[in-house]
Length: 114
Length: 112
Image (tube, rainbow over all chains, first blue to last red):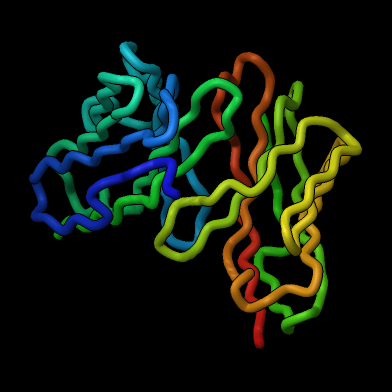
């Protein structure tokens, strides 16, 4: 069964809207959660790493005020894309990690900004 | 900086035609090399973790091997349902934390 639940799977919204994506760890307590972005025909690019109860660590070039990450519990992290614009359209994927487990990924969220 | 290069970019096989995918890496202090399978519109699905040179792991028609510079994913007698993009990733030294560095992937198509 699924280890990670990511919602919504698809979002279409107008430019200027803020969008929240949820990532839940179903099978174990995730001390660390990761958010990735993937463009068509390309590999995953890490956006940020979040540890439960701490501020997220963002990769170089990722705007922390644009992509707000909250990791309030060991099973839930959220990514909010604020004031989204067409260039933010992409496939966003979360992953969870706990203990000696490898990273397990959600099924992604296809974000389309009109 | 950790780097991962996968080859070929794309591979077409006939059903039953065995082959191998390559993952070359440079990393300071390898703490793990990971193989994932990704279907279109889905997140990556975990396949294997390899930790040290000489290690091998198998699952159904897939076998992953590791040397100090590269990893191979061998596919024996593939079936159409093995069609997917296969991603290789490395976890580097302590300063990298738990983050993974991914290769660009190999898109595998198995024709019936």
